[in-house]
Image (cartoon, rainbow, N blue to C red; front, top):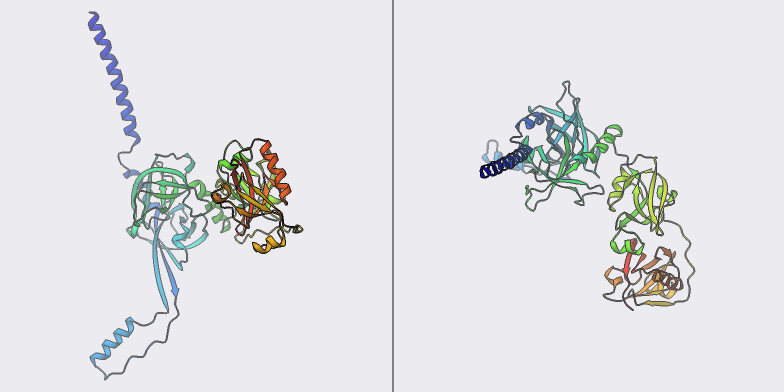
Length: 487
């Protein structure tokens, strides 16, 4: 009896485990759709093909005269046909195809800027093959987005923009577009990665997907399973020109703000801070006492910029802007660009070993924005003196006419001159070369080798293993962190 009770209990346990396994397996199976047909049928009418025509004008020579032959001669027709085919053309038309999608029933269409760039004529082809002429509402080359409009008496099918921030790696997505000019084509895949930087512009933040994207898909939508546009298909990585499962889409979170501004102003209005920044490396973080290698290190500040007016200094590390954390250097331009013009925001910086909060009034970035050089009186040249720093592999000198002539330097504004770099030293490995100027050492300005000595002594007394230098050369200003080596 006891045996049967134990057996019965064991069977019950097996049954429970089996049921749990079945439920879990069934739940997993349900997460992968059996078909995308219903969703595709619903979305296809709002996806359009975009055909553009550009006229390239070319200089031409004089048209040669056709030789005269007796009327009715077979040579007359032959030469007439030959010269007609080979007549110098004054204009040459080129066409291209892309994709787009409708976001408003009155005919507002989104596509890539590169799809309609330099186009003299833009036609939008609906799913029912109806052709509508389109005009450009606005375009933005930095994010590669464009807004078009068409005139129609009928309400057009449209799709909503979703929130790409809610998407996770592994989520299902659907891409619809016009690959190779074939018309509405649907492909499915998953999100492979987020926040991709493909060096296409200052605001790169792409969604990577393995849904097939090919030539002609540019400007088409990437949908989530609710039928919301969470990306605009823009680029592919491919050694062959065809899809290998690595496609990139502009996230809807990035696109939404740009689209709104293009519709409202016909152009984008981006926030402007007025700083040149560089990455915070572990060595730089250590040299300034920052716990983590994060934020954006300010290498220079433009004269008259919001940053200068707000007292941001060279050497500050911007860790937070308008309540948003700056985890990496490349985060800052996107955060600033998306901030409202003239808004006063709080900026949290790391300065001289502590957090400092600064108030900044955000400016507007202009295309022709050029940083004005700061006017500083040059220091008085002094007799040539040199200092050898074995622990850094550097030899430095106070500026003098002799040093200026040797390295083709005019009277320098401030700093000491690098007159020698030991091959294989930390300084050499970091690209410091003869003729470079050290403006700051440990975030303190230095104008003489005596000041360099004092500052180095202070840095070493604090137990620092690295020292932060602000270097100036023909390429501009940059920070370099050097590890001390045994002397």
